[in-house]
Length: 210
Image 1 (cartoon, rainbow, N blue to C red):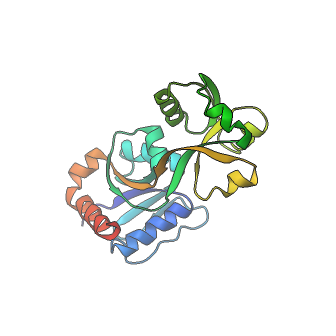
Image 2: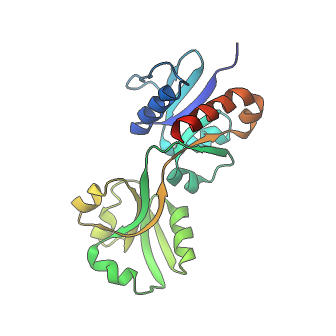
């Protein structure tokens, strides 16, 4: 019998979207639902690890998982040494610079220095470096919208789907940085050892999302 493929998936909605896509692609015969606190879900062919989105690249890069699903935001922040063969076209959102509407003028007046609050320090640094703006990065991992409201930062770099949270807190998108969607990532060693199994998964997913 072939070894089970271990799949690292982020908790929450992206887990459900990925499982549904696996069913649609005939990779899974039926949806899997993890119990409320269960972190490993198995069937005959797969072992699913239910982890924080930020941890998915680590599990895949270090071979604890053979494959995983992760958004561009997490992937580009972590820059893991893995293959990224398929855009799954789920979890679509946008990485943006956001702030108070009255600060638009500050942003577009060619500033030389800004304070930026974000949970994506690497993405933010690279983006503002490309614009020739020096930034002081303030790392936050919750309620980032508070930073410009309380004067902690000039702007935030965050991921938005509908923009509702920004609007409810009086913030607006100042400038889009890049779109983000979920990608399949593959451990390099697993791709060689379990080549045919993983190639079949890639092929089935490509046929479904293309």
